[in-house]
Every structure is written in C-alpha cells, then in structure tokens.
Amino acid sequence: MSARPVSNVAVVGFGYAGRTFHAPLIAACGDLRLHTIVTSKPDEARALWLDARAEADFEAVLADPEIDLVVLATPNDLHAPQARAALEAGKAVVIDKPFALSLEEARGVADLARDRGLLLSIFHNRRWDADFLGLQQQIASGALGDIRTFESHFDRFRPKVRDRWRERDGPGGGIWNDLGPHLIDQALVLFGMPSGVTCELAVLREGGQATDWAHAVLRYADKRVILHADMTTPAPDIRFAVHGATASWLKGGLDVQEDQLKAGERAGGPGWAVDPRPATVVDGETGARTEVACPPGDYPAYYAAVAAALAGRGDNPVPPEQALAVMAVLEAGLESDRLRAEVAVG
Image (tube, rainbow, N blue to C red; front, side, top):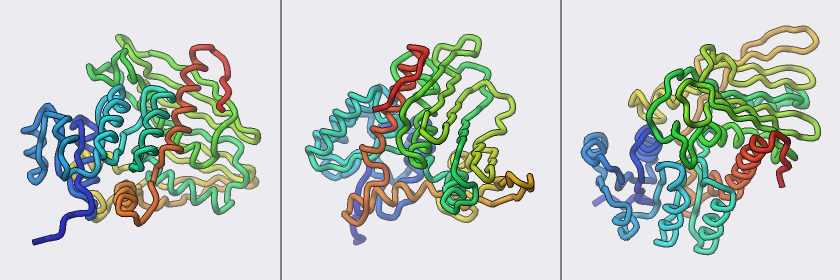
C-alpha cells in the first residue's frame, strides 16, 4: 500500500481558475493529492480528474478530516468568508488573487490564520512567469543600471463584453481587481512599497459594466512604475518596457504557461514554459540591440513550495504579509480613481 501524500487538497470552484490553473498544478506536484473538487458541475470535474472526488457542498469539505489544504478558486466576493470558514475548520488555505475585496477584510483573514497557526498563501503565480524571471536576472546583474522607469502591461483585445462575474458591475469585478494584483505584486517584488499611487479606471467597451481599462503610476523616490491593463488593445505588443540608467529591457508577448495549461499540457513536462520570444536589451550609449533569452517559467514551483511549507520543510511562497501589501496598493488605486488624485500608501 502506497504512503499517503503529504497533503490532500480540495479545490473549491471549477471555473476558469480552478480548471485551468489550480487542478493541473496541484496534480503535477508529487507531494500533493487532488482529493476533492467542489463544483456545481460535478460530472465535468469527474470526467477530467478521474481520481478526484466531486462535491457540490463546500461544507462537506470543511467536515472532511482527510483534507489538509483548501484552495479557493471562487468569485472574489467569496474569498474572505470561505477562507475564514476553512481556517476555522482547521484547514490550511490558498486563495486565488485578489486576497479579498478590501484590505480590512484581508487583514481579518490573515489575523485568523496567524491565531490558528495555519498556512495561508495567496496565488500570485505571475512571479514565476518566464519574462519576469528574466527581468529579475537582468536587474540583479546590474546590466540596466539603476531603474528609472518601469512599465508593465497586461493588454488584451476582447472587444465583446462577456456575461461572466468578472465583467459584471458587482463586488470584486473589473480588470483592476482581476489583473491589477498581478501587476502590483511583480512591482512590489522588485521595488517594495511605493509612497503613493495615482490611478485611473474606465469602462471603454460598448455595453461594458465593469472596469475594462486601468492605468496606475506608483511613485518612488528614485523611479516611477507604470502599470496598465485593458481589454481594448488590438496590438498588445508591450509586456515590459524597463529603462535603467545605462540600458533598456523590452519584452513583448505573454508567458506561455496559461496557454499550455488551457491546451491540456502537463505542467513541468517537456518544452514546458519555454518563451519563444526573447527580450531586447538596448544600450543607452550606442543604441545597440541585443536579444536575451528568458529562463523557462515555473508555475509548478508555487505548489511545490506550498507542499514543502505544509510539511515543515520550507517557507510559504506568498505569505499573507506580502499579499496584504498588494491589497494596500490595490485599494489605494481605487481611492485614487475616486478622488482623481494621488493617494499615499501607508
């Protein structure tokens, strides 16, 4: 009889995030077992994951002593109440971004996890994008000099409004809540907290209900960080434009791991996460352009680290404190848009 995996995992929610990201990445981790999927469409879940149990009842997961980790891939307004319920049931928790609807709500969940001595982690998977890993290497090497301007985009061309909760005028909807956490988290990993945020949000598509255009400037003493996301750009060529004192680093295209997961490729398998589009380094003095390949991306590293943390062999890959910082900037952006002014970040 084989030994029990380190942790049995329940994925709650089997929409895009649960189906595309969480279930495949958990299944690819040898120290985790995809035990249960909570979904309103259990037949679909069973067809895709034959060894996992499918449940319609979240409460059944909370009452199951075999489940160690609850992964919340549900609509944003459910993140905090479901996380609290799971923590109160003695389960470790992973929450898909954003952490919660507000900084105050997120703090309450973090406090509960600390008081119960349970792991709480937020799924900021874009830390393991190939382009971001390559950018970190370039900055650490000093090849660009001190960074003066950092521009990061998630631009998409989706001109037709879809009938889904992310695009409705409800709690947690809109592109700032959806893609803003990715952009913010990467900026904070590189530069820490800004002193202020200026943000503008808009609905530009015909028939749009929720924000589909977001532009924020994070103020630092020695640099400016520009974060942009929209669903209205026919030519989404810019992913990063990073300008240092001696050179610039330019990168187009999105990390391939999401598309590979959607296509059913095995996470971590042959050819996994290899970005076919190199970055370009432009020398400030000569204007010479040099293509630089990025290292492969590594989304599986997130759940490998979660498994190690649960087993007491490593650190939480995205602890609540880091995710709370993201929430602080996200919330400052909302307030800045409301006031039409810069908002300080404490």
